Image 1 (tube, rainbow, N blue to C red):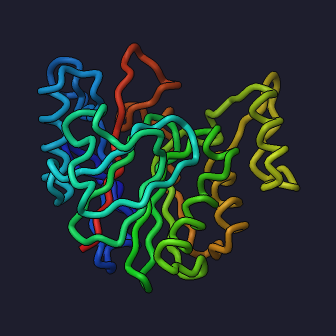
Image 2: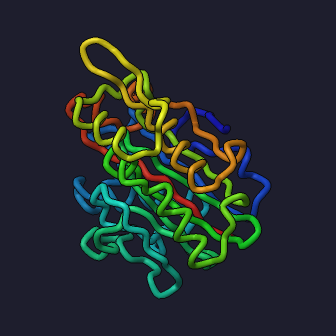
Image 3: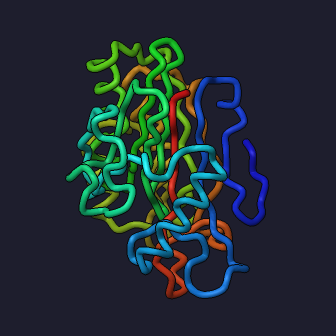
Length: 263
């Protein structure tokens, strides 16, 4: 993994470098003046948010005005996108695809984007069918099996075989910091994806949920080989100087983006 820190240097998975694929995860820049910190969220003055999106898109190597985004609702809806959707949500979140937490495509030069601030960003690539999927998985999406929905959608739409998929889980809150209530643990246990409670870490007074392991289990249950699944190992709360984190708080509610594009 490319974990180089620095102003406007995106995080990348080294293991994706050999594929006809562009990807990158945006970071923070605490040295910038004001409250922006390279935040891509629309909560900023729109001119500042768009400037940051253009800066990051240039650094990653995609066209900011072509970005396709969803209006994320912590659900499991997967949308198939192509050139007809180019630019939806790039400048105005109200124009993004509604009720959408995952995007899949076979269209080249069409950048997809999901945004997070502790939730798991997921990149799924099929090197056989040359297809790409991005997903946003918080605890609700994880419990609802958005990982499995993403795999199923790529199989149904593009003929992807799950054994061919390569899946990367980007920076997100780690099991070290994701303390949750009994309702979250109960919901995950009832999902049936973790019969041995591998993703639950008991602690006093509250348990922790391992979103990396939980989504890995969901992917494996969908047929993705465990050897094809990699997570960044970067906890956003532990590294709140580098990535936006809701749990870290600090009075700043920014978002960072995961961007992917087929060549």
